[in-house]
Image (cartoon, rainbow, N blue to C red):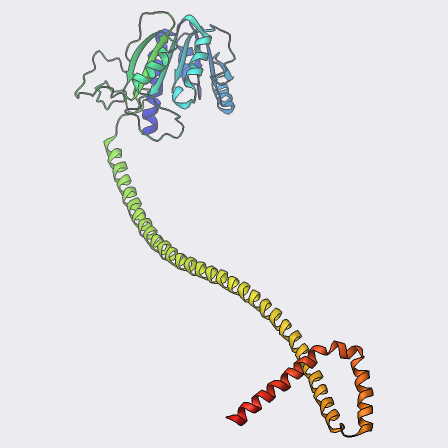
Length: 384
């Protein structure tokens, strides 16, 4: 039912401007499937050109309306393949809300419009149109749309398009009639007040020269409202809504469980991270301690080497002292013997003139000092 309502909205615009196109050169920009261009061609236009950016759509429209005399072209509205001032009437329904640069597109439409021609465009009213159309780059309020158009066209007439819920009284067409509904109403009565800017679509007739407005209101019927079917659809939608609500509740429970699991894992991760930082700090401390111990070990090894060298020297000195002590003892026991004296003198001469005697002079001094020290200690002991 939404599709038939939208279809009637689109058809209404073309039937609304149909009285303007007789004997006129017409361009239907962004024609889509081409039904609007066909309406204008049947309304007596001198020529009708129709363009759209999608080649497959244009190919289908060209095949569908092959006998209509309409010239279909694949074209970008910002770069139209037409001469300047080529058209008297240009329709641009539901275009500007799809464009990043709507002003450039309107400038291109102005280029191909005759000086005394008219541009008729429509766009959803951003204040009332349902939100969320993914194909709309920007939606305009009536004031914004008029401001945009007047930046290029000095003369504008503004119209509003509403989608009504209405009740009609007509003669019976018969149960088997397949003809479209058509209603010439002498009077349309409103039963409810509507607010300011409550219309669904804004329509603007723009021109470069001032022109008299000659567009009468039009009503395009879709299909009658079948209340029984609406009631069935309402109940179907209620069932769908309940199922969706249960599904959402289930998803919410799963989401809550997942959030709790994430929080638990986050806490575990933080604890592991803390442990890792502690281990890293301990490793750094251990590396510093190892470095310090290595320095101390090298220092101890140096001291040990020094002490070992001093020990070697001490042992050598002790050996020499022992030899001298033994030699002195031998000399003392042989003092009474002349032969021993001569031998001693000879040996003494050899010793004192030898190189080793000169080298060991310090040791002998040490030995002499040691003997004196022992004598002093002995005397002190006997006197005490």
